[in-house]
Image 1: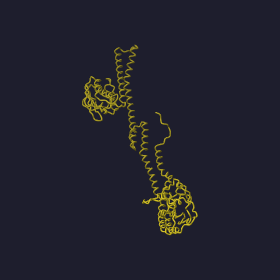
Image 2: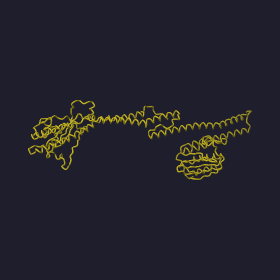
Image 3: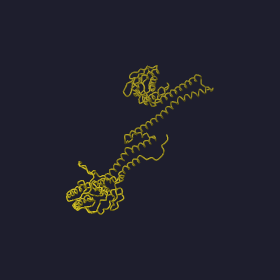
Length: 527
């Protein structure tokens, strides 16, 4: 297997730190969205001007209505599409200025000389409302001008001059409310950070017509600078400090959670993997802390796999040592007998007699048969440890094959033999054949099988009336190459193969205690 390319990769700690740093910096990115906040402050200013203008417009309209009989001249007729519906109980004017659109105009043009002075009655109304306007300015900081025909009749400046040439005033003189944003020049240059805000460089102008008898009686022309966003932030500094602390503490908390649930368990698992690679068997113990459910599952799977591979490696090493020992004896015997036969055929003085030659040839054949039996067992063991592939069978036909394979034995079977098990008939026959062969080698005349259905498993008890197994050997009978009948051709692999077949299919086999003969309990998985 080729190794992964040796290139730079960010560590998990670096990735988590980058994410947390990005989250922490996000509030600072909000500085670039000051214009949106500016826009909200501008609309708030427009709403305040609308409310203030409407109050003054009502007072002004009452004064004009009271003087209509004295020959006061009204302005232009209001178009029908501009007049509110008489049936409407409310006719709100909603602030709609948008700093992000194209509503920003040049600086307000200067006032011009009036073509003709205002009528004395309007001048009288302006003088009467001037104290109200000035008291209002003290609180609202808004500038007010009352203009019946485009001529200023009240205010601090430009009284007697005309504003009729200004766009918003011209629209109001025709009965249409109009508000605009215009550039302004600050009294002094703002600090560099103030460049984030456009609201500092504009004025909000509101021109509200005064309607009397469906004609324009005047215009309430107001202006005000929007609230300073930085002043607003300074006034709310305590909240922003708390918000910043909350972000910092939240970032630290998230970092600690990430560290405890992901980084620390991952580092420990990496250390365990390195220790396992060095052969440290203590590394198979569970981790001190798993963090998350998924990481716990990953750790359990990894450590379980590593431990299973280690056991498999130990098994292979032990098996190889036993196999080498088992093969060495017959091979040594065959080699010695062959060398003696060779010397005899070459006519050496110490040659063998014909009877001795026959004995050595018989020994060679016997050892060869033993090697063949051992090779057959090894093939069966390899097949036994192969993974099952959707296997299914019933025990009834398997037992029929077992009887034909051991015709000299009395094989009795009872119980749920028609229950399907998750194992092929061939492998089930291998298990039962080794048990039967083992029983025959220990002088059993009858073999009994009893199957009991236990829903998830089929419990099969295989017993015989042969020689009992001695207490010292009961713990070793499933070990590979352990046999008490080596002189009779036993390989000591039969029960090991049976256990391997059962284990590979999710079943089990164990020796049951019994007073006579031997009994084994097999648990076959249900198909």
